[in-house]
Figure 1: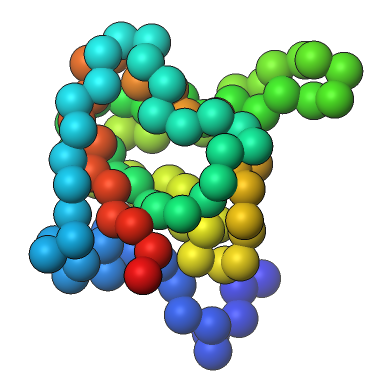
Figure 2 (figure 1 turned 180 degrees about the horizontal axis):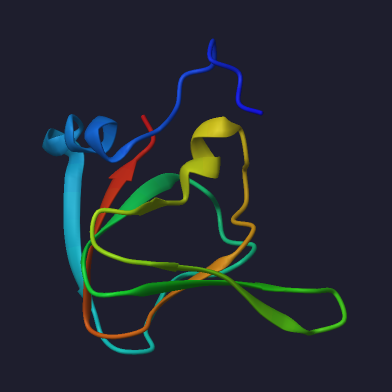
Length: 102
């Protein structure tokens, strides 16, 4: 259960960071970030679809989320994660916005 005293990240919160927002177009199958990369930013899908996958130590991959317009990902970087715990890949041509941590 979420603690109501804890701040939560939302798409609205993301939009308030517009001065630091960079939007990139990713081609079908293009990797946005990889599991193990430095976690230094948060993302939002502007249009298209992004797939999040994880890879086990045994090499097995699992899809953990399919994200669509308006959905955010990578917010673990705001919660102290120093490395990405998943890989994000554009499933179709997708426009994705990024806000770097301060």
